[in-house]
Amino acid sequence: MDVKYALVDFFTDNTVHICEISELKHPDVSKLKPEALHLWDKREEVYILWKKSPSVESERWPCRVIQFSADRQPLIETRRKSEKGSGDITHIPLFAPKEDLGKGKREKSKRPVTELAVTSLTEDFPVIAKKQRLNKNVIHQNIMAAVKQSCSENTALRSADNNLLKEVEKLKMEIQDLKYERRFRIKAEKELREWKEMHSVVQELRVHDTSASQQLGDSTTQGCGLEMNFICLRQDVNIKKTLYNQINSRDYKKFTCELLLVIFGRETLATHSLNGRKAANAVSETIKEALPANKVSILIDHVQQKFNVSASEIKAVIHTKLNNEDKLWKKRLCIAPVFS
Image (cartoon, rainbow, N blue to C red):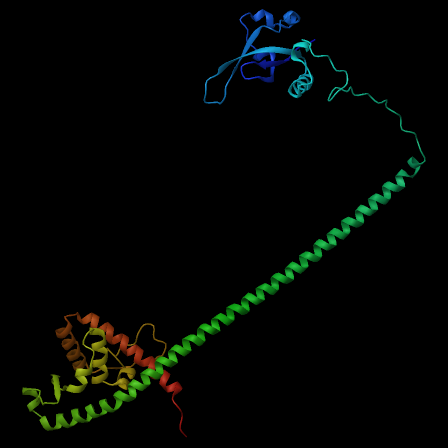
């Protein structure tokens, strides 16, 4: 009998457990050998080294062997009887009886191999195989047709999606164009109102300049002939005090643009250039007439003295102002009402 397990009684805490023979410890090791177990005395004490937890060292637990067995199932039943109090531990046999039949103990019976009888189905087998092949071909054809149909549907959906995307892009471009036109129209209307307000003032200034030049004559060479209501920048450039005081003097760019409007007017700025030369990126072949050089130099000197900036920066502002006035003048010509 191959003994592997033992049912032990821990008399210190009155508990019964099942353990392996290899876990039992005895001063005389020869008594725990398989050939010497039939001479075992139940009164002898053995001990087991167990740990209560992994972090704790092993402790020595004294116990007595109740029964030996080759399987755990008989020991489990014996422990169950002892817990219920139906059996006396002292009268339990040293070795558990071997169970012929039990859980997991049944021997598997080999069934004899029977030869398959030859039936009449073997004659119809080629016909059945042919029918199966035909069914497979039909299924395959149906699958391929469904795949082709799905592919064609996908291509149609993709083409429809591409058309929708193109239409969306066109609508976006149209919306941007409308927004740009609206902003430009608002700006043009604002500039047109300002031009109407400044037009009368500039006309008065021009009339005064012509009358003053005729009355002063040679006295302008000696001095500007200053009056109480005008400011003389230099030579023939006289500006009304009320207009000069309305010019924004916080920024040299705004000051230069507004001073250009007061001196030359919007129409002159829109139809003239700074140097009279054709620009490299100009579309039209016509060359604009240059602004009066003496007045431009007087304006640049005045802005330099007032804001301490270079002449190149002032000329860049003048170029920008001339381009803006040109665009606005063309826009006004397009939106202005035509009278018959």
